[in-house]
Image 1: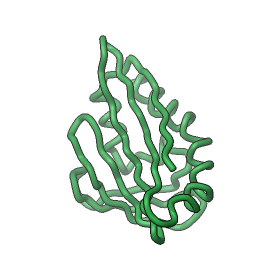
Image 2 (image 1 turned 30 degrees about the vertical axis):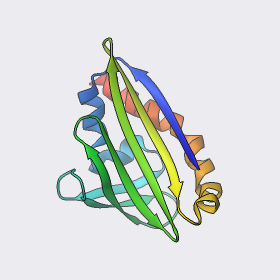
Image 3 (image 1 turned 120 degrees about the vertical axis):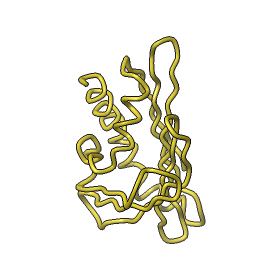
Image 4 (image 1 turned 60 degrees about the vertical axis):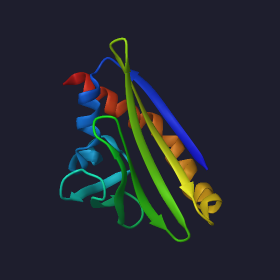
Length: 137
């Protein structure tokens, strides 16, 4: 299962990137998070922890990193990985930023049903929050 949401903004790609990579403040715009932190700099292989408002804390790893353009963080679930891929592009003075969620592995379908619909439902408002913060700065 995979789904994504893309928004357009007048904010610079650097502003979106700064918001997305400021893990300690993810809970400001991600309404489903209570807390998040990263052990060290935001780079490939970095390990962090997410605490959702409902559920228990999970460890994640930065599994893909292209500075200023995209990254993926991965959470391990039983027989499945949850991948959050965020990327942006700039065209004619506008920034387009995308948040993509995918489940991979033997139980991907099950976790997609259990968790995916909630993620999909809140993703537009979460993305709007990022846009609002970026455009206000």
